[in-house]
Image: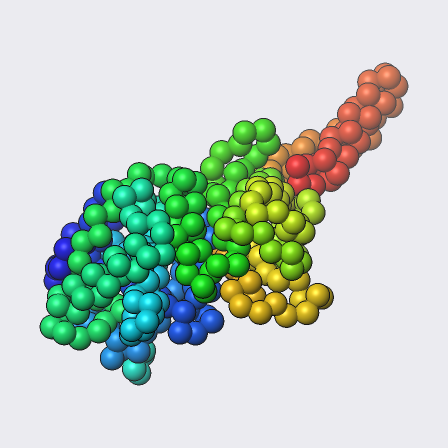
Amino acid sequence: MTAATTAPQATGHMSGVRPSVLLLSSNSRRRYAEDVLKALALPRGAIIQFRYETDYVAGALQQAIANGSAVGRRCLVAFLADRESPETGPFVVPVRFATVVATACVADMATFRLRVDDYANLEDFPLTEADIRAKGGWFVDRLAEANGGRWYPATTRFPDLHLHERPGDDPGAWLGVARRLARHPTYRTSYFVRTEEPLLGRGRGRTGTLDAEGRLHLSDGDSVRMRVSFYSDGYTPAPKRLVCATDGTFLKIASDDSYDVASRYDTVEFWLRPEMLRFDALARVGITLAADTRAGPEPGGGSLTTSAGFPVVVRRSRSRLLTRVSAGAAGAVLVALPAVLGPGVELPLRVLCAVCGAALLAVANIVISHAR
């Protein structure tokens, strides 16, 4: 994370590649604070979007957006608060690595679409609020120096935080980020969420890796399991709910769709199933952890909502369609065969053909036609 104006154009998984883009979020608005929770909650490969006024985007990064070289760069998403507070000092916590997949400048806004990757490994990063703020003061000073004395929350020039990451979907790294964020008043009573990559099929299943667009691809015969963990630095008695939601048409919940949060940490599993389709469809699954509004609004950081989701492409199973058509055709032939053979064939054989044909038709229209 040294100051740089160029970046390796790596593609795919870039674990270990030093980030060349820094994107900061803050607590100046509720949405910015919730963007940090979202970045922490999304499963690996999901897409998140950050927007900045161009006045807050460094010139070198604006140039990279214009010539397209920003796409493919590795990025560090971090939280920075109280930058101008003389009483407390700046508070900075690295959150997650990501890859820039698309950029755009529209009017006076710059947009970054990011595919999230590893969590920042903060084993060697300060843990107490005082030490984090001391690190934050150093970071803000070096950041200004690297950018000619200007303040840019989106830049290619920033100091090295010496993050020695462990590649992979590491729950320990996620917990380390959450514990440090909880040292700031913004998140002191917040719940942090981690969504694992979906699992497909029965038993242990296989990991449902999201594609380059952040989409999960399913066949209409797949089953999906999603494991969601949450953590809070301190228990709060105010009611909260963890909810899994889908479009309800092409992708449905096959388990309880909500969980009443009554502890500081836990792991919940949601089951999903696609509907049988006559065409391919685009659905969406979302994970939300929020204060239970039925009990009234909750003040402070406890009112922040974690909302993370990704699109799901449900494809009609071609193999299932072929099997159904083949079984149906064979059944129809067997049902019609006794009439074709005529009375010259023995009755038991004609009855056997009709029964087998009816059984194949039942399998094609009842068993194969319904999702497993």
